[in-house]
Structure formats: structure tokens, C-alpha cells
Image (tube, rainbow, N blue to C red; front, side, top):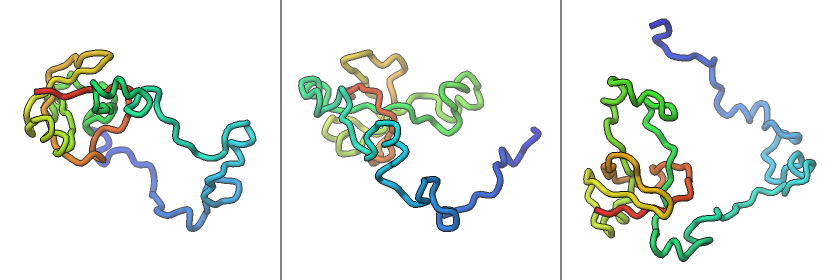
Length: 152
């Protein structure tokens, strides 16, 4: 295969900041960024509520109370590549929906069961996903602005 050990990037040094500092003008962690201020932006980090969210669009959230996040992939896949390879397809042959057990119980969703995902934008265009229970931090993390409601 050529590289049975995989890609080698060199030795990783943990906590290198203790020896070298951070890549900031002061070498320290900077909450106020002078570099950002120099280009005319707010130098302090700030959270901006998305244009569509339960807080910014409560009328939509009344009908679609859950927030769908997408973008996380099985480790075997990069973006959408590899889905056509039988060896990789066997690793995860069907889509999976991660949902918190308390949310699932409130909706009557069973682990391993099938759900229908709907949103005010587009319907799910795939086989219905299997439900997999887990804490919210294990759910996909890329917010796509959709608020689906899983229904059995």
C-alpha cells in the first residue's frame, strides 16, 4: 500500500505554549486582539445569534422546536466522498440521527428506530435515519439553519 503507518507529520509537542508562548504579539492568550482592532473589527470575541434560531425566530421555533446540526461525518468519509465504495459503505450503510435520550423520549422515538425529518426549508432526501442516543455534545456541530422535528 505504500504507507501502512499513514501520513506522518512529525513529532507533536504537547503544551508547546509553555516553551514558546502563543502566536500573538504578546506571546500570551489574548482575549482582546490588537491585530483584529487594527483592521477595524471588534477586538473582543462576541456571540451573534444566528438569523434563524429559536431565539431570533420564535414563530418558526414554535412549529420546529429542534435545531438540526449537520456536517459531522463518519471517520471513513471525507465530505461526501467514499459513499460509493462498498468497503466504506459497509461501515455505515445508512444515515444516523443523533438525539438526546430525553428529547427522544418526549417525542416517542426509540433508539434504532426510524424517524422522518422535516423543516420549513427542505425535506430529508435520503432514507429515514436510524436514531442513536447520546448526549448533545456528541451531536454533529455544524449549524445549517434548519430546525427539524423528528417524528415517528
